[in-house]
Length: 298
Image (cartoon, rainbow, N blue to C red; front, side):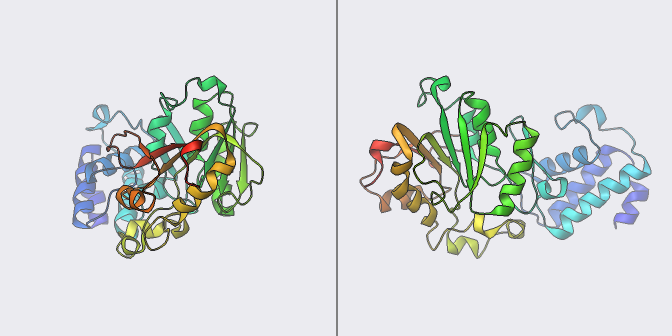
């Protein structure tokens, strides 16, 4: 089929149509940066051809060389047969205007906290220039730590992960953004490797998928490190530990921000006396909570 396509498809428009058809036929899952088969096709085709990702229209009727068609069709075939998220095929992921290198040592970056950092966490951070220390817990590729460094110019940041492999990816991204003097990478199981450290701000996008959901995840998720997804029977194992330990690592006026997926109702049942503030994101107000140090349980 793909050999035949190489001979019969000529323009970028042709290849996009073919990609969408193949993606739909294969029942691919889109949840790692693209929402639809068309969006994923546009990204893969433009990325493979080294064209601007936000400029499709000028190139739609451009004829591709044989080499270009071969490269694009190979990428489409891999997406269909391997069921890998597109980000692993291109080794890049985007959060807003920021590009990050990624591979299968880390999950594909996707976090509502990234949206909130675009506004420097207003109104919860009164003066961004006065924020001097921050922690990104479960940093993975280092993307949120890097976004924090850009949001808070005077902050020194610790980026923590239990996985040494993930930290190697984070090191590459921190280096690419010339932030080695401001971001310290630490191998640690949550707070265990941070004795005595306190921060003005702690953010975390920890594992939060429950056992039942892990058992039925689409194939695309099986390419991601399971340690970065699974968090016990109810999905709250990591979040519980963070809530119980965070007060010991926040300054007096420090705040904690954690993303928890679809676990809001379960979390509120587990901590009925904790006054969670749920932050508004593009998908609603049930995915990210904020707590001041004085509000933390225990």
